[in-house]
Image (cartoon, rainbow, N blue to C red; front, side, top):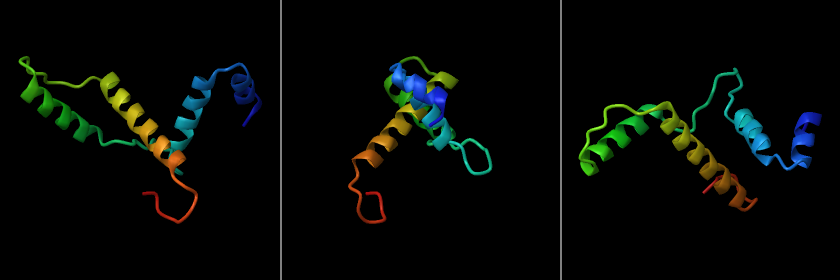
Amino acid sequence: MNNKQLAAWENGSRLWLDREINYDICTGANGNRLHPISRSHVKRIALAYAKRTRAQGFQRISKSFLLAVESNALAFIKDRVNRHPSRGKTLQ
């Protein structure tokens, strides 16, 4: 943890630190961004669900919608890893 991160943590800015951690764990060894979701699958699922349940037919998915789904998926993954006991080699 560098000085900037430490100062942010001490000032109670956990949101900033979470953003930094999320960036670090979602960056591959080659520097490319790793997405915890398949964006094309999320689009197809959301549009298919909207078609079945909504009177208005949606045709597009916004970037903010995808970012919200990605953020929720990342939070779910981190929660599951943190709750898993420290034994064995497989996350279950």
